[in-house]
Image (cartoon, one colour):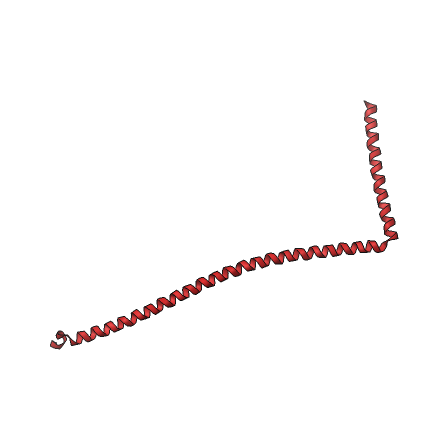
Length: 126
């Protein structure tokens, strides 16, 4: 049992060593690549910067679209409010015209009434 556990530990160590060697080889290859093709590394960083800029631009465009949609909703609400206010104003003017007309009619009736009162037999007697 003790030998089995030691063998398992040894196998784990071998796997770890293998992974570390692969990682080391990968790093060495990257270092060699960078020394042989430095312009490729530069291009890669430029591509990364361009990618970052494009992502930033996309994010800004999304924010602008959201702001546009909010403004569009506010504009629609304002247009509805303007229509309501115009209708109320029209109703007010109609009511005012009707009121003025009734007021003029009342004045005419009062004039007729006063003329009738003056020409009535009671006013002649007094």
